[in-house]
Length: 334
Ligand SMILES: NC(=O)c1ccc[n+]([C@@H]2O[C@H](COP(=O)([O-])OP(=O)(O)OC[C@H]3O[C@@H](n4cnc5c(N)ncnc54)[C@H](O)[C@@H]3O)[C@@H](O)[C@H]2O)c1
Image (cartoon, rainbow, N blue to C red; front, side, top):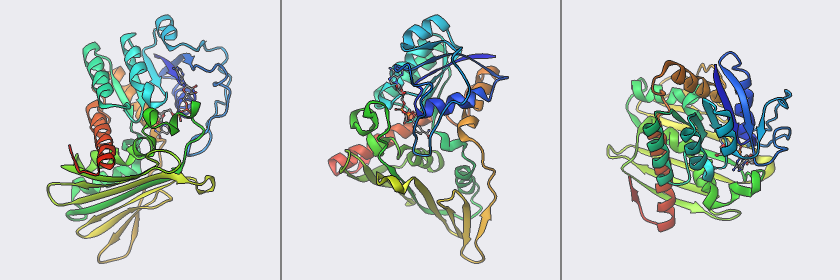
């Protein structure tokens, strides 16, 4: 059994907490931490619905100071579900205290912080996994499978989008503060950036434009330039109203067919010759799957698969390059 603790009990902290409770044969929940003592019992918002903890966890030691918790409880695994600008500080603190770490996306607010996280993980031999959850989403995996197999012919171009409302529910309004979250350009957009990096690899350079209306960087639109002439574009915007909800999807055009992820999360193949068909998708809890992979890696004492820290740092660097390009109006080379 791995002794596990969670730092940050907002929307994602509660989501991970519920998943950990479902892994009771693998994980022993030994401590919880949030700067706000009432967070455990509060219902928390996310852009995909509310999160709450339905079981009574009042018997689990609760701390408002993460350092005190880490020193007293000495967990084997720590989940860092904090605002982005705090990821590096607490992930490093947890590894220094002897724990393996799962930390939410994006990896950090700056590239320098991400380098320190990787350096600490390597120096102390502690596993570090960043929650770029789409790599465990079966619909998104289909894009990688079709791209890698060449089954639909040569890849030509792809277009991604991800739209939402401004996440005004975040603790202390951290989501709306560009220095803390990177706003839509880093926070929401990083899901597509990670998918693009994972499937197509890093581009040669990016050119981006951004919008700043209700928050700085509330929208971003990027063209990813690849040396082989293939083209990828992506747009993200969180300036929609409350009733809009959340939408995302992509088109990937191959020589012989177009692959589509619909708003409903279906994957459709539109062949140039022939009828459109759906690719059967087994819907899984991507957050649970990423956690199970980290737990297996710890138990089997092997490197984590799929979400290796260096790759999630590349994703962060790609998103930061897009922000720089939008700020300067110049292309940014990776
Ligand atoms: N993977 C996904 O699909 C996904 C979705 C939403 C959010 N996220 C990420 O998850 C992370 C958390 O987002 P959220 O929506 O849960 O935020 P949130 O604002 O709902 O929750 C953050 C929590 O951290 C607590 N906190 C702040 N400072 C603390 C400290 N020093 N010590 C202990 N607790 C502290 C706050 O009280 C709050 O409860 C972010 O990095 C976000 O980008 C990921």
